[in-house]
Length: 140
Image (tube, one colour):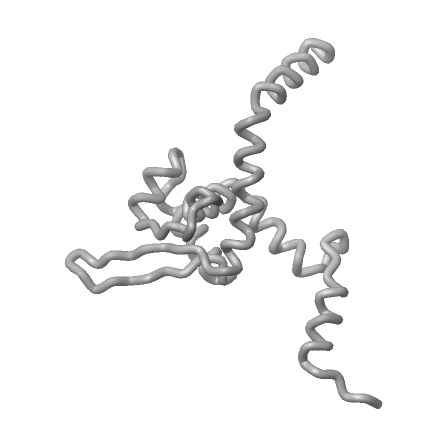
């Protein structure tokens, strides 16, 4: 029986992931990245996709940028993104302590998709609102 290399095992695992299957771990990842706060945090940290480098932001900057997010939700979301390797948290020993968040390479690859979805939503919101009104009128 031939021995598989680590790369071969990883390739097989990648092929085995199918988010349409209930027990697939990729479904949990999809649930996480489809959260509105995750999408907005990734878009905010990534800055403009045309920028040379993504921007790092302090917690307070993120909180101000994401109108309506609670402190608890922002903290939980940042921790989960850090755990998944999508962002890094850097603590600088100043007075007071400075904590900044920045996208990792993995997070940056997802940022490009999320920023595109954000732009799409902003560009097509009027059409969606019109369609909602038409639907509601027809089904009233």
